[in-house]
Image (cartoon, rainbow, N blue to C red; front, side, top):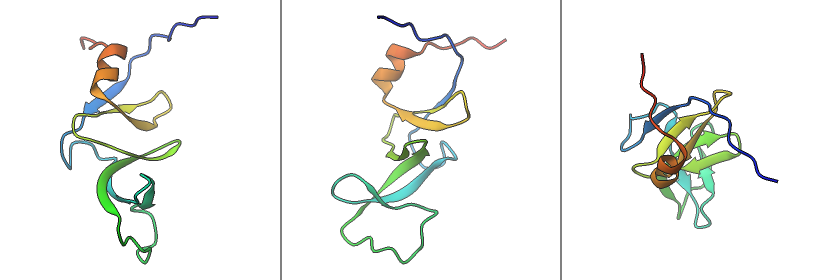
Length: 97
């Protein structure tokens, strides 16, 4: 069976640097790519050997954000990153009145 995505207007901001989107925060990632420390965590968590990267809290947990990613606000107000090539294939700009 095939399905078509319902047309829905979303808000999105392309992220390039700190400050481009208020929900993108710096987190510490371990070697496996999982967030070891996020801003709401206790400050005494050991982050030895971890790498600091920008990330955003999604419904599924923290996800890394890379330069050029679009930060989408979903239909329930949630946020998540989307790679530019996927964004361009999925969305088209809406002319605002």
